[in-house]
Length: 278
Image (cartoon, rainbow, N blue to C red; front, side, top):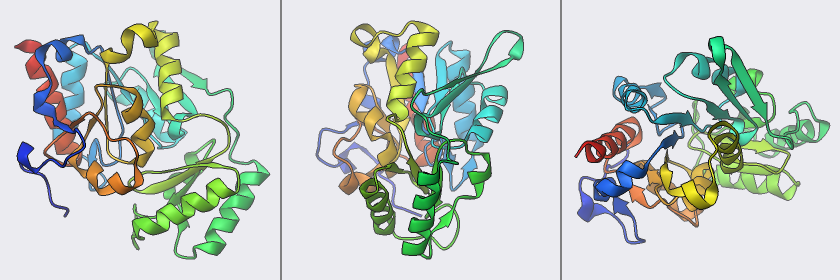
């Protein structure tokens, strides 16, 4: 287990504020709560009762709840249907699924998303596996539509974070986009990321306007593939384990929790809802 920050005095320099520094006015402005899944909602690969209850608490409070994940289309189908969410952005922004009238699943795909059957991605996958023999394709690849996921930490053997960084650099040098999550290096073609699809969905579904509404979004995340969200939304919050990746990131979130992973997400939600009620 990694060490967990125990109080605000443990927070590093760089302007990070403990989540409990959120003001009542800031909390009451929030309309949308977006969050990563792996190691933000989950803990050691499991969705805990605590973090799942926090999703329901947000739903019951009337907030719009939208996971923003690198996980595949197949997972997003299930999440959109079965979790207390208003939509889910998947494959790092390639798609979004949400339920419409009559519980009919609706899908939106980014116009620049390139299917992962594209020969360029297949050749790049082979190059990565030749160059890094210990790397492997993620087990959830069969349910992906647009990206290639390279597993470096979801299953044993866990590879060093430096290896993930080298895999990312190789893919970028070959002209692809690549992001490091807490478990995978996700590789795709097309100009999009978590942020661009989140904004697109909020605009089309809810009439979101950047100039007016950016402060109404709270995003919670944990790793470098969440950096565009941290950079864009002033109310972004990192769970404590985000600090493992600070050397790979130029922009950290505004807030941070004292706890890691699912417990940190629940801490963030409780702080938000407590201040909204106060």
